Image 1 (cartoon, helix red, strand yellow):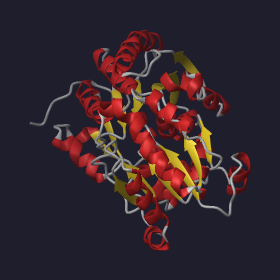
Image 2: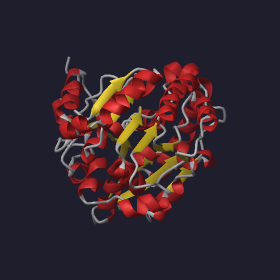
Image 3: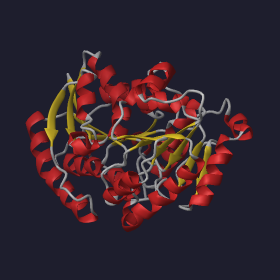
Image 4: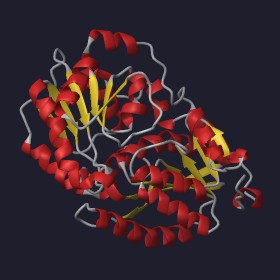
Length: 379
């Protein structure tokens, strides 16, 4: 039985790995060790590890790592703490594969440790672009990973241009879309009831994270977004930011602008977030879900700032600067009948909904030998 160590530190990447773990559970030749860390363990961000437990997934270990303050300094020190712990964890469980998802720091640290311990590393969403330190982490993971799961042709071609050997690059799609095709999202009726929303009124879904390189300005950036929302006075469900540097300033701005029509949630279950995308009229902010997942719901998206710069996007995305008047205009454009009609029937550029099975089949069948473990650049 091949044992797969899976790392998750945030609610976003949990959506990548949950359908994969469900398939592993039903495969007699595979087993998993789920290692939960970072934001999942923080009460300020909803203690989302509880949602993992409610999904009846077996958590092998919880690794606290996050130092208080949410600054650039605490981010770096927190990763150092995680490196010490994850090394001991890998030594204890002795996985056959390490499965990573996305571009967060704890994923990079796991890749570094895995490579140094001669454990093969597989990386979901490899080769994509994003506009802050996460983008650098993603491409650094590439150099430590042995198998690259690309969600689109653009990403797979970039991996080859980075000097990765062709046999390592697997075009599979984005696994977080798989559950949508299966109807795994909360019904509209339950969404409206649970979050006290009015079905007859337009709904804005707002998710805005700090940009690490601009952390000093994250509060002002959130101010611009919330000023636009306040002028529109449309019912809005706001999801708390992640815990990167600048998070505290965004949280302060949120508390300052709390209005009767702005509902604030610290954390959401995966199916509730998908259910909100299903009923929302537009998603606003800088979350990758606006580019990766919103297309599956034909949901218009206003992408603010540079956090997702260069990333492959569908026709549902309107890019705009951190300027309240431009954000307001972009929201109104996305809500227009013309724009809604333009995105109707659109294809999601990140896959067709069967990525998880492809990933599991590769993890199960790829030969673990020196050919896999010894990496060579193609240039």
